Length: 191
Image (cartoon, rainbow, N blue to C red; front, side, top):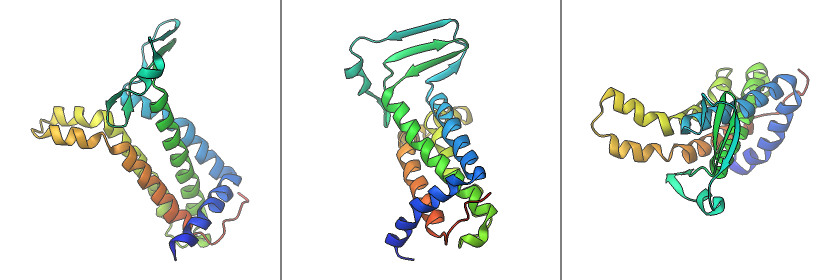
């Protein structure tokens, strides 16, 4: 199938998946569940906060654009709501939200495709695998720690490479969405 046809089918397929209860539930699970996991993997969300407080850094606009590593930016505020502490980095939160929408859309289409394989030209096993790339973004923060514990000597280049996991994941999620949703031959919206 030509790429333009796949692109034209993707958005209607996602919309059809979101009209189904199971697809909407999967989307909400991914879209609401992913940002906390992503922010925790960056070290911006943690348990252990006490009380209620908000602290904002001096000159937050300038600091919001300072990179701490590739595709990660400096927090400009600290919000504590017992028992959670959140370092607010507007650009990191934006990345988390974009990835969350992609994860949710992949989950929705994956669930619907898995339950309606006759409507799509994909095997039943394609559904759960569509959002696996999103799980890789956890390697942005945790990957270097795992390599350190294991004792890999060549962590320098790998740590640098792990900083680019978020954009690669976004590309993989978009690609998997086009691949799976683009094969759709019309999903039923009941269910």
